[in-house]
Image 1 (tube, rainbow, N blue to C red):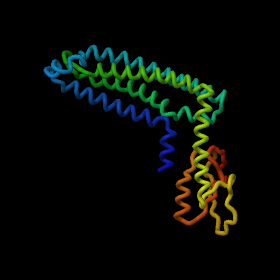
Image 2: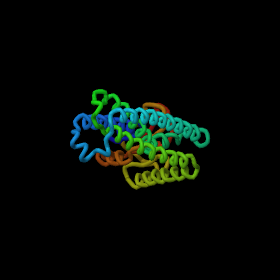
Image 3: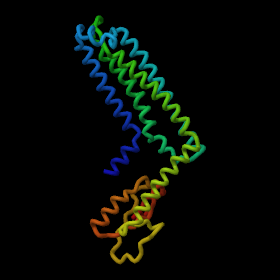
Image 4: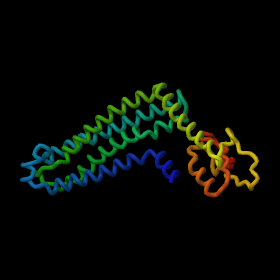
Length: 252
């Protein structure tokens, strides 16, 4: 479960995909309302929120083009930030910015807004000319949300490239790792060999080696602790998070 959670966290497309699915469902819902909205009900309650199909199509067309441009600008900004991180700081901290929930959320909002506008345009083909629709009004609300997110994203990027913010994030991550290892060292069944090795292990040793070359991204210390308690064994960890290991390197 922890491994699956790590993979989902490291995949940039997960959150934008969720936003896009919501956008598709919203487009279908608004089209259903447009096709089943009674004129008497509109005149009484929703007259402010409805437009004619022709105006709605014009609004959707304009917003879809604008959101596509904003999405392109966002991608370009992300590439500039990644280049800055890689050249001025360290390539190893790129993942922190790429996988940041705020970054992928902004991308998800822009992509979902564009997708909603396109799908709504396609679904409005069979709506009568004299009908009243709410798709245009919903698209305007989505555009307003996108503008707010765009402003927030610009502010977030301007802070992310500052060395003070970067150092603060690194310090917080380091504190979490130190706390995890401190709790681990308090256990009798699990230890880190490069800090506090367990000696005089008389039973047979079973080695776990790396199946591929790369950086250690995650160590499930709690899982190792529980496994050691359940099996009555001693686990000696020979690596730490962030270590670069080659295929065949002894890990445990």
